[in-house]
Image 1 (tube, helix red, strand yellow):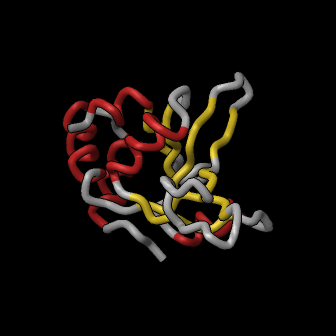
Image 2 (cartoon, one colour):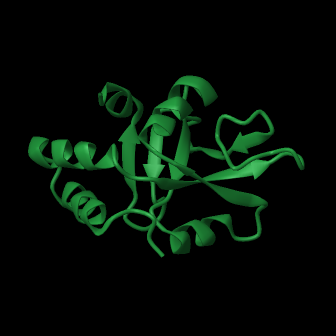
Image 3 (cartoon, one colour):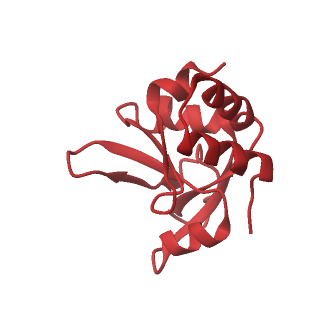
Length: 132
């Protein structure tokens, strides 16, 4: 089940297939109005499914070169494949929380990967932070 609009998925696919300035702008405009699934770990019974809760830990991944990235998902099927047997739950986050991940949770993260594995799209740190 998707948590984003069909329009967003279409614009994401257009950007994956053809990274033009126009497709990038359309995608960025659409990105600002969507919610995504972000895997988090609830550290105790007081934790909430919010990325800015001190009792919640946001999942990030390190690539082979040692760079850190956050992961987010557009639908529960992809999210559930990713979490498998891990103790992750979903926090629904919007665009401002994407920027928060990069400015407060891990200031060294290189970006955010949207739908890791299937048709993944890397959203570089600078690109996310430059969107107003």
